[in-house]
Structures are given as structure tokens and as C-alpha cells.
Length: 88
Image (cartoon, rainbow, N blue to C red; front, top):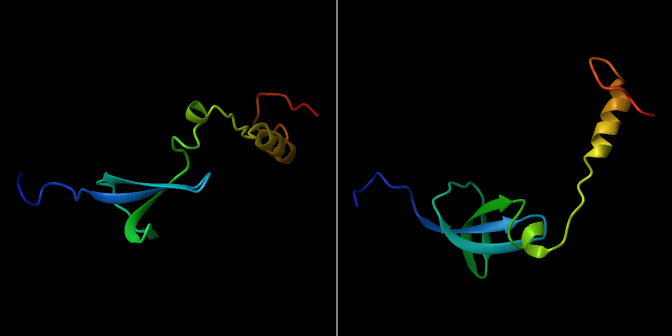
């Protein structure tokens, strides 16, 4: 391989912040954070979903409250600029 044209391929710690699951794998991703894991310091990448927390792999469904955000927005701004009606 030619020197100086390939990214740095190294061990990186991925941290699933939704359930505090951590795993080490090799990656070329650039990171600013570092964290110690099992006695060794690794570059850290924070992720929201991994195989440990994804409903497809766990069989558990998490409910995300998006309707509450829409209702809050409609109560705050009413029908200004909206083509849909406000149900109260």
C-alpha cells in the first residue's frame, strides 16, 4: 500500500448511550473524545442505536412521543400559517 493516502485504521470504542452498552471494533472514523475501557484508552464514538438497543434485534418496542411535540407546537402557535386544523 502507498504511504500517506490511507486513513488511520485503529481500534475504536463505540458507546450506545441509550442503554450504556460499549463495544470495541476497528474503524477509520475521526473522533475528538477518548474513553478508558477494560484498562485501555480508545477513541470514543457515541451512538444512539446499536444491536443491543434496536427493536429488530431485541424484540422490544420503544414508544417515542412525537405526537406530544406536535400538540405542544399547535397549542403554542395555533393555526398561524397552518393548513391543518387544530383539535382541542
